[in-house]
Amino acid sequence: MTRYADDLALAHVLADTADAIALARFKAQDLRVTEKPDSTPVTDADTAVEKALRSTLSRTRPRDAVLGEEYGFVLAAAGPSQRQWVIDPIDGTKNFLRGVPIWATLIALMEGNEPVVGLVSAPALNRRWWAAKNLGAYAGRHRAAATPIRVSGVNRLADASFCYSSLTGWEQAGRLEAILDIIRKVWRSRAYGDFYGYMLVAEGAVDIMVEPELSLWDLAALIPIVTEAGGTFTDLTGRPNPSGGSAVATNGKLHDEIIDRLST
Image (tube, rainbow, N blue to C red):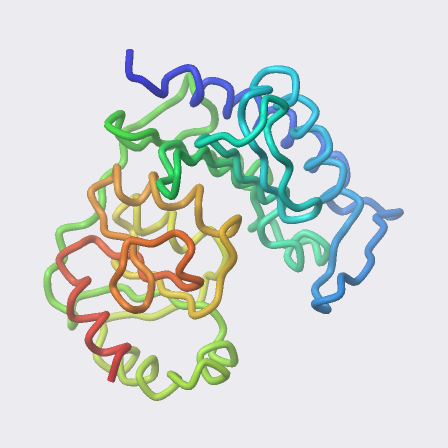
């Protein structure tokens, strides 16, 4: 048993709770949607999931801090802590409110600045991915149906499947031409967006996933899954920094070239 086995087991319990709440509200006729100060939408499912997970964590991990997208940062009951749970109750809220099944709850545990446990649960896809430091990465319908996952061995950009977020985001970041240049050089390109592209990298179905602007709750859970699957995960400067505000996830073999091209 590894050091983080109990924490990973708890993450699955949290995900079971989140799945039940979110699925019950998915495609609900009375779904309530409001707009946050940053002009992004939030549904009653987002807030209900985060409240439920915070409640469980306050009972089971009172010595750990919690950061969530909807309700911010809360110190551990015992005071400052090196351990922090990071929650995105519904990653892909726009998909969720439009009835697109590509959305998920993201749950991470960080020690200091390092994500050591990550779980992504996408119940509308009947799929879950998880990993913990030195434990490996897995995917399946649930924990009892686990299959180890591994990144691809593709080592040429011309053979690579490239995934990216919206082109408008890259245009706003001043890197649209770099993205278009990569798209012209790869074997295939698709904009899956949100958590899904990163999970496809971890599974070896896609070789590269990039995003120009992210918050900690968007990516903390993704990092252990990609890296434990053998991949590389950094920000746009090439630093393995979960607080860098951007993401480049690859199978490792293509990472340096992608960083170089995005820096041009």
